[in-house]
Length: 413
Image 1 (cartoon, rainbow, N blue to C red):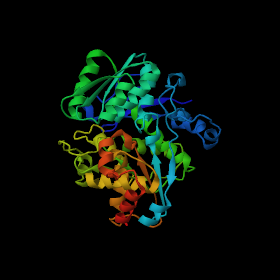
Image 2 (image 1 turned 60 degrees about the vertical axis):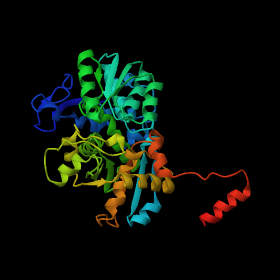
Image 3 (image 1 turned 120 degrees about the horizontal axis):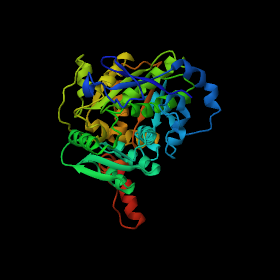
Image 4 (image 1 turned 90 degrees about the vertical axis):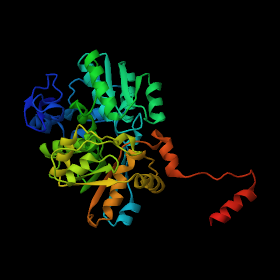
């Protein structure tokens, strides 16, 4: 099996030894996030369609040749990955494109895409000999870490903003994490988590700092490619908060291109909520810096006003020839309804933001009739039941008689 060959700063290109404890470039500061690069010649010899076809493992550890872990015994005993990929003939016809694919990553063990990152984070912590692991989160990264840490026997410390959905906080507690509800925003929780991690020596699972977490997230892109026999769609729509998820798809496709399994990286279309869109603004204005600002969106998982992986996110969109879209909370709620009622996939607000972006993007006329598109749904709708109630509407209240039912059916018609 191959292993990480070097770390490289996304801003200045400085390289570091993976055996070091460097997480961000000391020259560029926290914005200098690092890429994990491999000996692609060695990977190419091992990572083949034939080898994958004979691999019976159904967790993301099946991609170990492109993961920064040498010893598979460090992986937590959870089946992360192998989430369903659905083809929607309904939306292909509706949007006048060749194919629409929906990847439902809310089907992971803790019901979110973030399990992929925590799977690797926990493995790296165990590899380093750590006994405790911590992160800040708006909810999903935290619950995924709590679940993976519980299986691995690690103490887990979580910092979330006080307005995090109660369902997500409950998940943390049921897994046994020590949870700190921080009075303030996600940014306040993040800064406090970093201070506590430094003070107590916990392993840092924060995706925007730890370069290895993107390697876990990229497995969704590897999976998509394998499911499609490495014939990738033209465009992939992804929700964007801190910028880690969209950059992970770029990394997956970059790695596959390096080893010759694909010839072209699909266009990545990043979708942000209008109330939390600093990366969208930087992209549209052609800037290489972001404007930090308060957030105001019900999509809590992407409610990030001070994104730390912005440089990788902008690179992902620009280098893939992609684009960005901003959607309103109303458009997100409508996307929750439409996606569930046409595909059976129930996503939380942030989870369906990519789909909301596809619907809005289709209105611009930028989708060609020949194109194949994929949408990544990153979290299950039960994660945020209050938003689900807003999207779903109210039930009928009736007396226990058929006449009462008939009156309602009659008025509805």
